[in-house]
Structure formats: structure tokens, C-alpha cells
Length: 400
Image 1 (spheres, helix red, strand yellow):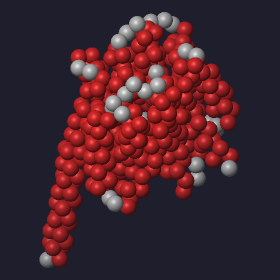
Image 2 (image 1 turned 45 degrees about the vertical axis):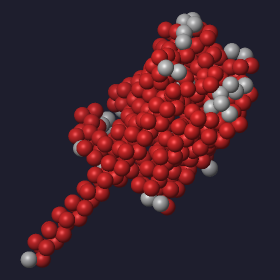
Image 3 (image 1 turned 90 degrees about the vertical axis):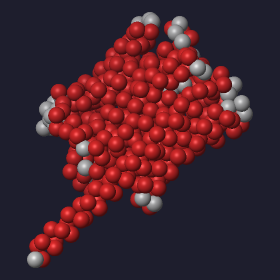
């Protein structure tokens, strides 16, 4: 029981940090109005966060590999407090950019380190569940953190959301320092070794699925609050309800994605989920004038989008089971890069075309991911058949 409690503590803190990443999409219009920039410009705060997370985390984890894991968790939480303080205390858009960079690096380091700690303190037969619990805590921020941030920002001020996260992080530092055991560092994996897998075409194409899937998702999700406010004409209360429903559906989709990969196989679950994802985004543009139809469609979008996550991870691990940790790390970096590119493209679309166009472009990117999935699974199947033929030839030679 004490061990379980410590793992749940890491999950709760991961939820807190996950809120800092996802929450900003729910209050983007408020930030834009307050700091005097366009919604498209404010959306680049998500781009900055994702780029810093995707590119910075692998380098920081390599640089701090030998540091005690508990100490690393405390340091990353302290940096998280600083990042929130910058957002609250310093005026202007530039300070928000700096804040997002600091927050991204601190979140990336904490999440990776917390999964390592959870795995270390869990019993051997529960290591996988321990990591899943931490990941679920981070993902739950999409369910509660985003709509809660919208409610707090509407009732008080958007800076209060960052202030609240900073205060809670101070409490988290105390809890982590007092309850988690001291654990040694790890042997660092050279960046060259991590990138060596990218020489394999099957892995490159498989990672492209992640890039286009999350890129298409990000194009639309980054600007979902302005979309609901201006295109759908929803009220503040309905926007909060819509974001909450969106988050609930994401958790259900994540669970069913893992179940589907086991029950129906990766090809059906992966391509099926991506297809429904693309169709949902297309339909969202069509039903935007009818608010009553938007929330159910938001749930279908979220459900199908997040069913891809565990299925894609399963797919990637099957390509290189001997390098599972590196594959998950690469996938995480590509995911954040896809979010950054998606948010950036979405900003250009909002600025030069219209808010209503984001769902169309997002659907196109997700459709590209479905095509990549078909190509990837075909290459993987060809590789498996070639391996079987080689085994048959070797068996025949051994028989003669």
C-alpha cells in the first residue's frame, strides 16, 4: 500500500504538470485579448511549448542521467514554479514565451523521471501498471484541467490559473521530497544511439503516423475555444461543458485503443481510429452552426483521436522490441514536434483564411496519417514475410 500511494502521488503531480500544457488551449482567446495579440499569435505559445518539450527533454535527460531521481523531480518542480511565476508577474507576450519554454522543459523532465521512479518503486509484476498510472495522471489533465482552467479564468483572471499551478507545485515539492525514496541515476543513452533507429525506413514511416496524427489534431485543438466561441457561438458555460466532455471521451478512447489493439489487432484499430478522427473533423465544420450537435461530435473526435495513442505505441514497440525505451522517447519527441507544427500551421490558417478552416485542414493531416499507417503496416508485413522466408531457407539448408 505505501508503494501504491507513492505512485499515485506521482500521478497527481503529473496531472498538475499536464494541466499546464493542455490548459492554455482553453483560455487562448482570453490571453490574446489581454496581452494585445491576435488569437493566431497566442496559439504559438503552444508551438513554443511543444518545440521546447520535444527537443529539450532528450538533451536534459541525457545531461542529468546520473542525478538522483528524487533530486531531479524536486529540481524540475522548482523550475515549474519559476515558469508559472514568470507568467503571473511579468507583463507582455515575450514573458509568456519564456514562461512556456521553462514550463515545457520542467514538465518534460518530470514526466520522464517520474515514470522511471514509478517503475523502480513498484513490484516487478506491477511495473507496467505503475507507468500507466503516471501517464493516466498526465492525460487526466485533458479531462479536468482544461475545463477547470477555463472556469477559473472566466471567474477571476487567466493569470490566476498559473498562480494556482505554482502554489500547488510548491506543495508538490514538499510531498515529493518527504515521501519518495532516494534512487540513483542511470547510465545515459547517447543521442547518436537514440537516432540510429531513424535509419530504418519502416520506423521512419511509422513515426510519420504520429506526426500527421497529432499534427492534424493540434491544428484544430489549439484553436478549439475561439472556434466554439466565434464559429459555433457557444456561451462560456457550454464551452466549459464541451471541453469537459472532450476530456472524458479522450480517456475512454485511450482505454478502448489499448483494448482494440489486443482484441481486433493493430491494423483495424489504428486505421479505423484515424479514419473516424478525420471524418469527425470534417463533420465538425459542417455542423458548427448547430451547437446541439457540436458537443457529441467533439466527443467522437476526442474518442477516435486518443484511441490512436496506445495503438500507435504498441505498433512502434513491435518494430523494435529490443529498443523499447528509445522508441517511446522518439515517439514522444515526434509527438511534441507534430503538436508544434500543427499549432503553427493552425495559426497561419486562422490568420489568413478563417477559424472555420482549421477542422478541414486538420482532417486532411489525419487522413495523411491513415495513409501512412497503411504504408507502415504493409512494410512491416513485407518485413515479416521476408524474415519467414529467410528462416525457411536456413531450415532447409540445415536439413541438407
